[in-house]
Image (cartoon, rainbow, N blue to C red; front, side, top):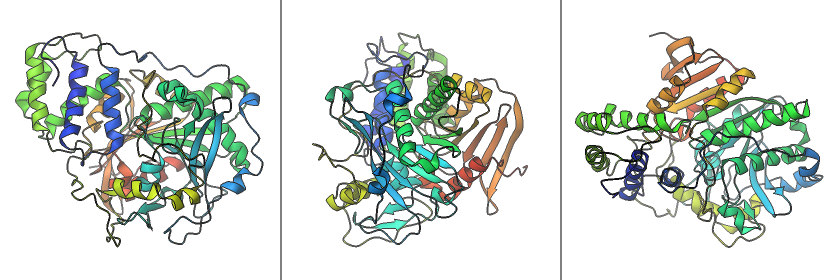
Length: 499
């Protein structure tokens, strides 16, 4: 426990999250643990993390960073994954070099649309952490075409996969995440928001050379959690270099972020308010926090009353999975000899264990064209070898404002049972932008059922909830998530049924 005096409130909040993890390791996945650890480092009194406004990487000349890609697409085609059911779409996996001198290469997994791949857009998905794999979560537990069975050996179809409506690209970044690597070990100590955005941009330019049929295709970036930083920062970088080149190098049309880290101050306040409003923490404790705690970034000490309230809240949250407060925990981490019957409408709470087993099989890595350099560590859902994070701005809302000025589509969604980056945090963050409301709060439906609620702001920012979903929305409400992304990609507003 942190000392009772001379402690910043931010450190107290992150301590609360960190200690909650310690009491329920099985309940929380590694992606959300990684976010907590970043915050703990970011807000420590002696932190060296740069929290200033994000600036795009400078002086990147396309002619110098794009390498020859002839023949590599054909080499990357995946014939069939072990234990995979029959499918009618093509899938690819392989490495794209993002820095030749450092020997830095990113692994990607790409699934083309089941139908109409020539006309449907290209959608990139990024998971957060930082340091977590889009293959582990996005591809294999959320919106990809397959999920892993409980035997860790075979796959089953996700009938609500997003490649029904887009050609979907998953990227493991930065170096040190998943199968992505660097030959320069110093890269693992010098990761950060800016370097990740730069490498992701270089990856895209080279990937489009490898898949030239997608040049000029409508392109969207999506992600969740700490990808609330990754996605807008990559979009900002694309816009910057399109303007520098005075032409469209990447045809970016919009971004989609879920349960996203957007604005630190409101994220933290909203988390506590969510605890109170959902009867996780008593009103008296929340009243004490609001009365005695200083939520400003410059606060250096907190009174004992604030520390005591924080301790009380932490005690109340033991054994609660704050990433889906109503979700069951994984009670048995053992693989099964034969696959359990799996649901198509939600995720098995032990799915991360099944995915880990599958991805570390040699035959799976061979089929994916992954781990070709024989890394000295296992594939992990979140990196164990990234040991430093250089920069993490306190807010990305100025980037959202820029996107509105450039007519990009911006949608922000929130699973309403997540307490780590909850709906209250996202609402407060959007409110801090002081945007006029264009379409007032209303319900939206999927097959006659209320899937969530939405509000549209001037400047074409749409905010939507997903009713009953946790931090990883497509895991918990796959049908609603597919409906949401379908509306996002077409630009059609969510069904406007008034209460």
